[in-house]
Image 1 (cartoon, rainbow, N blue to C red):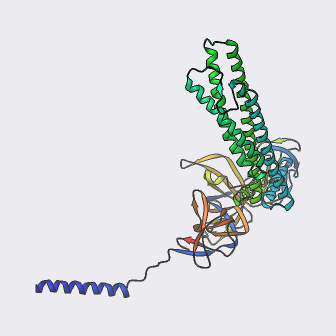
Image 2: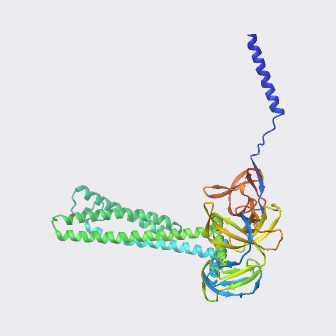
Length: 487
C-alpha cells in the first residue's frame, strides 16, 4: 500500500512539472493561420525567365510573324535605323476593323441601358406577349373549328353528354373511351375559351403552357380516332365508302391539330427568347462577359501590332528584299540588320512559355560573373519558329540583343534573361496566395469591418514577377483579402 502511494505521489509531481514547463517555457503557438493584405493599385510585370549564353552578335534576319501584303517598306540598304523605328508594314485594314468592332462591342457591354433603350426592350417583350396571345387565339379557333366541322361528324349527338361514335371499333371499350374523350374535350374547349378571354399580356407565358396541355389531350383524342378509322379500313368494313370517309376526316383533324401545336410551340420559343433578352438587358452584363470581351480587344490589338515590323536594336540595314504590294510569308526574313552592339544572348524556352514571347519585348539580363544585382538591358530580336531538342526536350530558341555597349559583356558568359511578356500599369492587384478556385471560378476571402470573412468572386488578369495578380473586377482598392502561407 505504501509503495502504491509513493507511485501516485511521483506521478502527480511529474504531471505538475510538465504543466509548469508547458506554461512558462513552451512558446504560445501562432494561432493566426492566415494574414490579411489590402488590395492595391500597382504596376505588374509578367516575366518569362531562362538561362542563356552570351554570343557575338550576327546579322539579324527580320520577318513578320504572319503572312500579308506589304503596304510600306521604309528602309533601303545602308540606312542606319534606331530601335523602334518602323521598317515595313502590312495591309492592316481588316485588323483595324476587327479592333474597332471589338472595342465597340466592349463599350456596348460595359455601359448601362438608357431609359429610351430600356423602353424599346420592354416594347419588344410586350410585342412578343401580344403575339403569344394571338397565337393561342388562332390555335383555339383552328382546333375548335376542326372539332366542330370534322370530329363531330363522326358521332351522333356530338354535343350531348352521351355521344355515340359512328366508327365501328374492334372492342366496345375502345368506342367508350373515345366517346368519353369527346365529352371531356367539349368541356375543355369552354374552359380554354374563358381563359383566352380573360388573359392579359403578363399572363401570356402561363396561357401558352396551359394551351400546350389542352392540345396534348386533344392530340391523344385525334390519335385514337385515327387508329379506329385505320383499323376499320383494313378489315372488310360493312361500308367501304364510310370507312374511306372516316379515314379522310381523321387525317384532316390530325393535320389541323398538328398545325395548332406547331403554332403554340413557335410562340413559346419566341416569347421565351424575348423574355430572356429583356432580363439580360435589364440586369446588365456580367463582369465575366465584359472581361471576356476585353480579352477579345487585346487579341485584336495584338494581331494589329503584328502588321508593323520595327527595328529591335540600333543598326545598319544590309538587305531589304520586299516591295510594296508583294505578299510576304510568316517568319520568312526579308530585311537584314547588323546591330551597333556586338553581343547577344541565346536562351531556350519550353512550349508553354514561347507563346507569351514576342519580338521587341524588353528583357533584363544578369550575368553570373557580376551577380544578380548588376542588370543589362536587352530586347527580343528573333524567335525561331522550329523546335530545337535540348537534353531530349523540344525547346524554342530566342535571341536577345543587348541594347547598350558595355565592356563588361564578353563572349561565352552565362547568365539569366528575364523577358517582360506583359506590362500592366496602375492596375488593382492582390497577392497570388489570396486567390483560390471553386470549380474553376476564382474567389477571394474578404475581411469585413467587423472581421467577418466572406467569399467574393473575382476575375483575374496577369500575375506579376513578385507574386501579385491583377484583379479585373470584384474588388475595390483597400479591401482586406486573406492570404495563405507566408505573407
